[in-house]
Amino acid sequence: MPVLKVARATILKCKPTEPVSYQICDCFEDYFPQPIEQHLRTLNTRQPVLGLQAQIARGEVTRGQLLLYTTVCFTGQIMNGGLEGFLDNCPGLIADAALVLREHGAPAFSAAFDRVAAPYLRVLDAHRAAMPEGAAEVPDSFWQEIEAAYDQLDLAAAEEIDAIAYAPDRDADAKNWFHALEARVLRYVLDHPAEFQEA
Image (cartoon, rainbow, N blue to C red):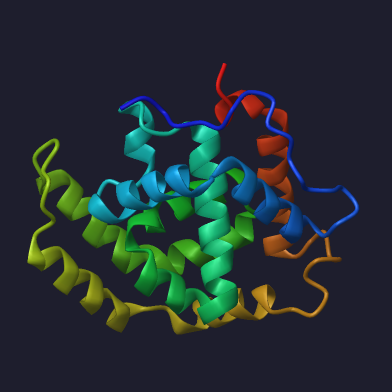
């Protein structure tokens, strides 16, 4: 299936006077109308072992789509239920979130997330190596091991990430991990419209 994109020259409703967190959510809504958002969610939930990164090579998503989708899901889940909420609800995005943070997050943010995600990433890596290419079904053992990974969670690192996410000056503090991540990803999204719009 070719990459799903919005119509050429789609006008984004985000305004530079709004907080970065609002702007990136506006881009998500404009670039991922229901059919595209559903496609990305299906890729993410049907093949959680692979994540979205593998879907770039398969021609299912663009790099920009991965960045925007993963960032908004990651920050949104954390704001709604803490980092544990993200890990519980989005196991198929854990490796993608680690990638996004390595490339666009503050080094300390990436390191803290890597500490928290390490047991989950081990499960993902082991199953990715064992899964035949194109396997349609995720084995029950994957879900059991993902659930067990919670027992190895670095709670101190998770609490540090949550505290920074909930900081009252988050949207005004350029050094806040979440503000900085969203600002960098937003800049990429705005600079690469061809990754979201039809030619």
